[in-house]
Length: 512
Image 1 (tube, rainbow, N blue to C red):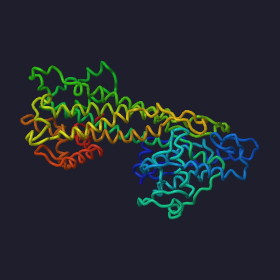
Image 2 (image 1 turned 180 degrees about the horizontal axis):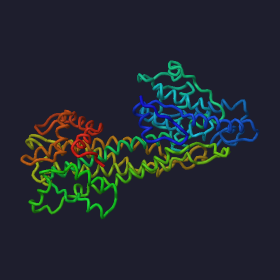
Image 3 (image 1 turned 135 degrees about the vertical axis):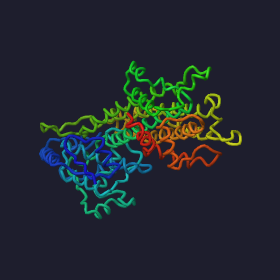
Image 4 (image 1 turned 90 degrees about the horizontal axis):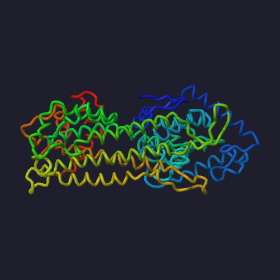
């Protein structure tokens, strides 16, 4: 099994995906263990002094003015975890919780938090045992970090609360730790707080969304090309020299992908014989501009994610010179903004995708295709309601594009008077990514049928590869009306697991 070694300088997106989705093992580097021990010595020294230090010998948030005596500090750390584990609602997905825990471990290993090495080792042991704390949908305002979600994870490290075992059953966390020979941690000064103060949940969801959207944007380039082909459109608008004079890299990449898919097509360019049509509609002609803008948004979000992956997010932090200082680095604004930005791009890509599907189904705009791509229009409804479903998804994606980060609800007796709502932005983006997958799948389904209905014209080799793979995946072709939901579900899976892009790349080579 692949092993990810966590050091002091952060982790990569591929590390997060390996642990969250593929169950990779986690190990601490010797450097990280040494940094943990060194920062703990600083915290222990401060704890022995009479002067109050936030998070070490004081209360938290609006209660930070109270000095806590040494005999109550272990109880203070336990209490912050128990009281902050106040989430409600459905369980969060296993991969999100594993990403959240791994990213918290990344910050612990930076040596900036002051926790003992055994706390970090226990977190790694829990991940390696396949134990996943139960984390709930609601409870994070994105400042100070993802408090409630991280608290549920910290609670499991203490042997309290509930967790899911590697077999998928939910049991008391203490029982699962005992079964795997893991001793619950007994928290000391600063450690409870250090386990809670981070943007790890929203960052983990951002990293996974970026991976999913990288595949989806390539998939959308493919389906846009298939629709252009089915509509007998021109590929001249995809010429590199046209995109070079508006030098957005995402636009150039999308156009290049579409051109690669369409190479050798016998369908493109036939609209020159259709007198009323001088040029293709925006949803076809401007496909690279819309998808390209989204790609450039992904690039910006990826830059923010890379910075966060290299960050040590906690409050207070142990600095290299030995100072322990309060700060605001746990605020989720940088991550929240790009999460919302991605949701906007997703909604717009879905919108232009649906417009192409609608064009394929409308006999007045499809240039010779049967109404709704039906076998016997009137007797058969064809793909009429598949487009309804796609339109409903697009409507939902537009609602999900409303920024969460534009909101703020003050908390903690006005001490935390401006919050990021980054967790909420991340949760709605996950829903949006799922929705976009389905929207792209409907266009694929419709465009594939439309291409097959262009009898006497030969599709591009890449298109033929897609059609072959699609039919082998159990997605039916043209014909009389049938139960469509299974076909659409199979098309969704075909897009989601990457088989659409794989089919194309076997012909074209890697897409951009």
